[in-house]
Length: 120
Image (cartoon, rainbow, N blue to C red):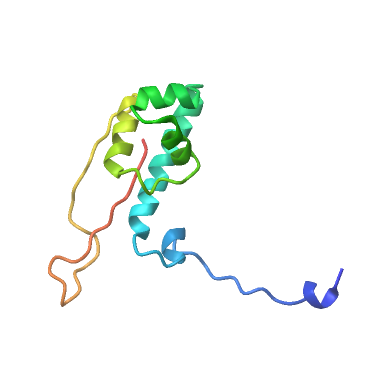
């Protein structure tokens, strides 16, 4: 083992909690929401022991699109469609709108809210 490399300190930068934001993507919040929804859809499909073809029929989606979603490639699938998938998989969906916790910036009317996904 090269001791010079082994003894070189590694800078560690804490993440924000959103890997998409850390990568600098413009739609980071939307991507994180979709990732959480896709993960839950995959979990339910696995728990119900559905094949991708069975899941595709149940979700009213082409099997290749289901495959892409389950592999984290969900850019072509809307959040609305993902919520529909969860409902078709037997889940209730509650959407709660409330005031943002953050204070508004002086030059921004109303401030900026956030979208969060919580599974019960």
